[in-house]
Image (spheres, rainbow, N blue to C red):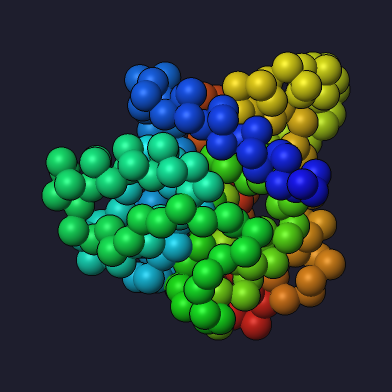
Length: 217
């Protein structure tokens, strides 16, 4: 098995363990990021792809006029999300599928917006996944990410790097840098960083909006 395949297998095991308790642990601390990400996505378009849906904590925050498709690498997480959609009657959620972010099974130019709520730091090859996001995005669309994103500076940056191997065992990454996302957009040349927003708690998490060049932000 390839290194990418091994990392995906490890992540699936982690998410299987976390699925039953994920909502209790993360609902409160991630709520501000989920709410703001969904609001920005709805303002940018109607057809929305959410990568890393997990147990579906973001889904209820999208307005009913949206058409949301969610994917996740973990069948256990998606099962929880499907239960939530049925229980809360979230009719704007059109589909929830088990899928690898590196190889999206959607046609080119299928969505107005692609959202990645608190998942980009966990994807083994994030640039490859972002290329797939760009492929399925319609002209003028946006990629919107929410995550723990540091700048690598000072004491906080040193701490993030030091604990990175430890937090990986609970499905997190603390060493991912904002400049990695910005650099991806600059290398492609067809995306610009439209906005970086701090969110609760006290800017510890951030939202990044990437918009295709040639269209107003």
